Amino acid sequence: MRRAHLDRVRAYYDATWWDYQAVWQNRDSLAVHFGFYDAEVATHAESLVHTNRFLARLAAIQPGMHVLDAGCGMGGTCIWLARNCDVKCTGITPVASQVAFAERQAQSKGLEGRVRFVEGDYCAMPFDDASFDLVWACESVCHAEKKADFYGEAWRVLRPGGRLVMAEYMRTGRPLSQKAEDLLRAWLHRWAIPDIDTPAEHRAHATAAGFARVCIEDRIAHVRPSLHNLYEQVSRYLWLGHVLRYLGIRRREAHDNHVGSHYLWQALQAGAWSYLTLVADKPA
Image (cartoon, rainbow, N blue to C red; front, side, top):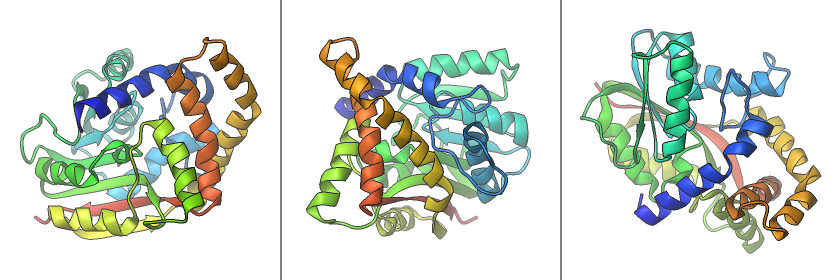
């Protein structure tokens, strides 16, 4: 990612730190992602943890693997994987404050040596070739300016026979109607996301990088309750956010996150995007 865009991503997450902690996360997940709902899940807190469980099943994680969490946020997934799947996990994020927070959390849980966190760009990673058994990316590739760059790096750092597992926002077409494009832009740009690609574009990126058995599946039914939960929360206090921003009390990036969350749901209702998982293998 270019430096200017990385700076924007850092500013976004630094400014929204309090929002995620106060409104969204719980101690078990430290989640900066949406929750998966199904017959196993009844609450918001459970859904956030279930996202990890769902993706771990898709990834077919085995004890002893070395997992890379590309876009690890506050380290919740790495910590969960180490504790529940008996793996070693490395997280990478361009946000220094997230690395510092994740390291403190890992230390408090006695996981030094099993998890580590690196400040860096997951489209140009500071890791040797063939370093990992699994690359995991949950709602993070969206921030890449060129999604193909991420796939190339994921291929490079995976060992032969390794796997890529992703959960990601994907647009339903290109181009969309002007209304749908406007709604997408109103959401994405406020979340420091330059654009999102279609499933076909993601498949093409993965295939061009060398991945085989690329499987993409729509999971919107699983996350729709979580998306609506966010929409209800931000809609309830949207007026207050405008007042605080007008008074100069609330940072622009934090206010943009709030407003963007409103447009996320509107864009979904307009059919502009969906939520999908992608699994792909690096041939042995």
